[in-house]
Image (cartoon, rainbow, N blue to C red; front, side, top):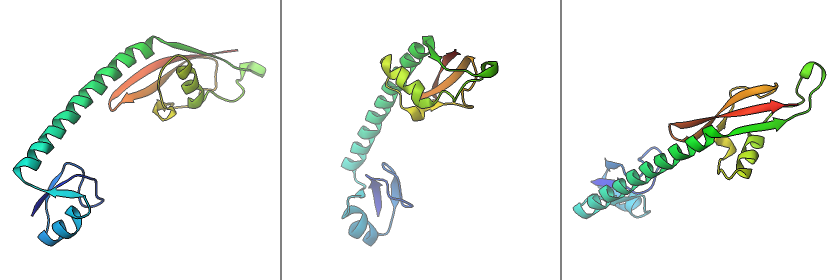
Length: 146
């Protein structure tokens, strides 16, 4: 029997996937517990409709991320830090601090989206990558001053 998975089921199938499984397994477990629905014309049309809707939503998110990228790349964030002998910075600038500064400026960025290759522990300009959407990255300038 062929079924369409409506929920992810570990080691069996992902949402939207069509698989052939044993009749008893399909009826007594997958369909009964709401993990899958049988393949028929109506369910296939619904699946295609859902895929089109998800594709349209994905395009909108990419478009929004591209707009936000342009805005972010125009920003320059400045952090004042305490320094010691030979202008050594005490501590470092963390993704949390960058996130808080971006929040003040009206951006909705999660600290997990901020990708720091190395800790920011020196004075000067530093580039920081922010993952806005699957393959869209914005690079912002961080200026660390005394």
